[in-house]
Image (tube, rainbow, N blue to C red):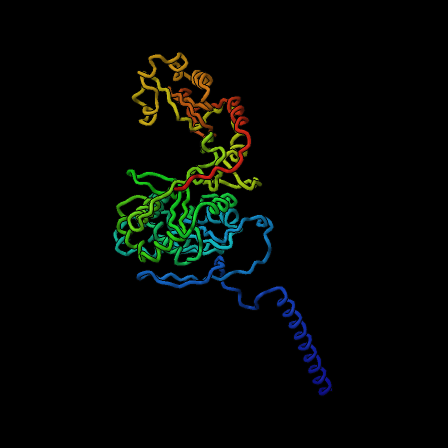
Length: 480
C-alpha cells in the first residue's frame, strides 16, 4: 500500500506540472501576440524625426539628439488633409511655470499632425511623453552668477518635487520671473535648433500659446522666396527705434539665416549672454544678434504674422482679404477652408457677437478721441494725443462738441460720421474707430459715470461687409 500511495503521488505531481507548463506556454503565446515586449517596458520615446540623428559641438557646448521614431499605432483621420510640412520645422518656446498648462493643448491641436517639432523651455522635462529641452543649460556661468534673473531657473533645477510646491515660498511673481528668464532664450534656441535639425528650409519659432493655420502657412512659404537666401520675417515691433520681430507673434528664419547663425558663427549665443543681462527681451536680443553679426534685418509680414487674438484684430479694408496663418490664444473650431482670410475669422468669431450696445465692455475704439474739455488734463497721454484739439473744434458741429457728455451723445457722433464703425464711452471720453473690433470685458464699476460702454453701428457694418464681396486671390504681405 505504501508503494502504491508513493507512485500515485508522483503521478499526480507530474500531471500537475504538465498542466502548469501547458497553461504557462499558452499564456506566453497570447501575451506575445498583444505586446511588443515581454517583461521589460520600452524606453520613453522622444518625438520622432524623419531627419538623421546628430551629435555635434559648438565651442564648449555639445548638442546631442538621440531621437527615436515611435511606430504609429493608429491612424489619425483628422490628419488626412494636413498639408506637407516636411520643409518647415516648428520650434515652440515655453517655460516650466506654464509648460503643463499649455504644451498638452498644443500637442492635441497644432502639433498633432506634424512629423517633427522641437520644444524648448527653461527646464528639461517630459510633458505628455514629449521631451522638452532646456534652452538655458548652455548660458555662460558668468552670466548666471549673482544674477537674480536666474533665481527661478536655479530653484526649478534644485526642485525634487512638483514645481508648484517649490515655488510657493517665492516672494517673486512667477510670471515676472519667467519673463526675466525669457530674454536669454531666443538666441540659444535658434543655435540649438539648427544643430539638432539642420536640414529644413524654414524654421518657425512660436510661443506655447500660438495657434498656426497650417494651410495658410504652407502656401505662403511656397511663394515667399528662396530659403537659400537669408530671411528673418515677422511682425515688426520697435524698441528705442530698433526693429525686431515680435516673439509672441512668431517669426520665421530661413535655412541660410540659420546656417549662418549656427555654423558660420559658432558660439554666437554665448557672445550675447552678458549683453542680455542689461537689455530687454529675447526676441529683441535675437534681432540684435542677427543685425550685428549677420547684417540681417527683420522683414515685415503683418498682418499675416500678428500677435493679436481674433477679438482684438482690427477688421478693415487693409486686413480683409489677407490670409492669416497664426493667432495667439486661438482655439480651432474646425473651419474647413483651404485659405483662411481675416474676413473668415471675422464671420466666424466676431460678427455673431456684435451688438448695438454692450455694457462693461471695451471694444478698443481708439482712432479718434473726444475728451471733456473741462478735465482734459486727467486723461492718459495717448488719449490726449488722439483727441481733437481746441483749434480743430472752432468750427466743429454740435455733435462733436457734445460727444464727451454721454454714451448716447457718443453714439450720435458715430452715426453722423460715415467712416465710424464703432465707439465707446467712459468717464467723459468718447472714442470711435474706422475698423471693426470685438474687444474684451472691462471691469464692472459702481459709479455709473465710470462704467465702460461700447457700441457698434450694426447696419453700417453689415452694408460695408456686403460691399466687400468675395475675395479673389489671397493678398499676401510683400516681404522685402
